Structure formats: structure tokens, C-alpha cells
Image (tube, rainbow, N blue to C red; front, side, top):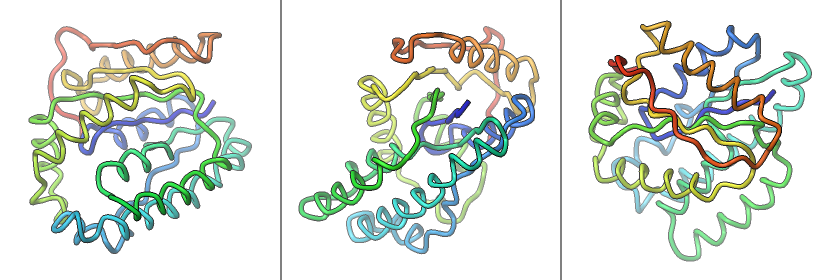
Length: 220
């Protein structure tokens, strides 16, 4: 089993991946984004630093993804808090013109060698809630995050998964969930993941899970 968690910045991907790891007895693969030396400059001037930032992420994510087959063999299962496919999604938003064409050629050459997840869990949340969570975690390079940029990511993710054909996708409304604090919410997510993994059809339609009626709070 290779499971990936996806969603916009601040939605709770890493928290969920860490919580699921012991539940599934799997290894965990977490994105190493803070090592990108261009990230802080990018949030200050996206147009100027977009290509440098994106190429660094592309190569860093590719290096991690090349370890997936060995990690699957070692642990019998793997949970990641990102997919390699997200890199191109961000590039389409941030990189322009000839630089985007250069990026695409590099991405396409590398993507052929990357193992795709058996199931991707797409966590959704509204922009206002994402901005609150981003502020709460207090990362210095995110302190001046533009709500318009987050909204553009929300729309880009929705469009991306509406036409995704590289595997199964489970869409979960994360807004009412607090799986960090509430074990019932965590087990609710686990049940839906298990059900999705148990389906025979690898190209099953997208589905939305809205969460327990009494859920509330904000995962990190």
C-alpha cells in the first residue's frame, strides 16, 4: 500500500500522515520543504523567484520519491504527505513563458520514473480556515501569506483532482475535522481510507466525505 495525503498549504496533511503511520503499520515519507533556500524570497516576490523555487522543489521531491520502492519493501506500506504530481500544479500557477516550458520538460522526464500512489487522500478546506491554520503554526516565511494566492491554490487543487486519472482519490472535507485531538474523527478518516483501498476498480470516481456532524477544530 502506498498512500498519499494531498491538499493546500495548512490543511493538515503532515499531521494526518503522522497519525496514520502507526495505525497502518507503515513507513512515512514527509516532504522536506524548509531546506529550500528560495522559499522565503519566493513568498516575498513570487514572479522573481518562481523558477528557482520550483526547480529546487522538483529535484528535492524527485530524490525523495526515488526512495519509495525501497521504503515499500522495507515497511510493507508507505504514507506520504505529498505527491510528486503537486509539483507541476504549483509550477503552472507560478512559472511563466519559456521558463514554464523548461520546467515541464524536466518534470516530464523525471515523472516517468516515479511510483504513483495507490490512493491519494485529498483534504479540502476553505481559504479563510487555511489562513487561520497557517497563522497558527507561525512559520516565519508564511507570515505574509497572500489570501489570494491560497485561494488560487484551492481552485487549482480542485481542478486538478476533478480530472485526475493516475489512481484512486478520496476527497475529504477537512474543515469540520480535528483528528489531532478527537480520536473519533481520526477513526472516521481511517474507515474511509480502508474502504477506498478495498475497492477493486483503480479508476473509481471521485467521492466526497464530509466528516462527522459534530466535528470541529483545526488540525495542524
